[in-house]
Image (cartoon, rainbow, N blue to C red; front, side):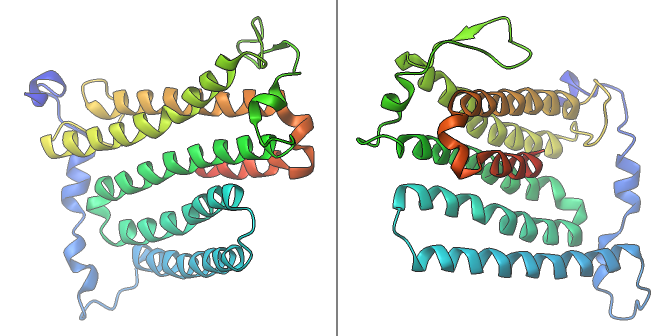
Length: 250
């Protein structure tokens, strides 16, 4: 059924390349030819080990100094992101024909980490008040213009609905991104994905557009929250953290 909806009589240009790529010979003990793929796989493995070591060092440091659970819980969730990416990249490099399935794990944790980053910022803002309530910190914020491209509109941070809308803008990505990843696996199995192609006869382009719009919405929510609270977050250097998370997500 999916084949009738998407591909019709069209042939994916990347299918032949995938068929020509024989990953079974990768472990051939008689094959001593270290081509670019094998060298890249080794480099990927070395970088992955370094990433895991750095991640575990930081995780252990936080575990030994676990004094602010609400804050450090979110930091730990974000810290695991590079390690998970490193592991999945390593196996994707080896089992390259199955990359679509490994990308599902990346998508799920990527969305999870982005949500954790928002909760971390919320905790930082709440920590500036005596009662540890973010609503109290936002109560005295005046109306502000929204960032581009909605700069013609104003937002009122003191309204209870503001924080609710920001959370939904960001956390919807934690729902949409895994769903598009699952749809990617399903359409791959149905033979109508054609990953990497911008041909509108296949599912890949539609899934990429949906994922991109969802990601932009989430990043816009983070930018809006940062713009409203940047004076409260100045000593936390959230911009550096935001850029780091954004680079990984992109």
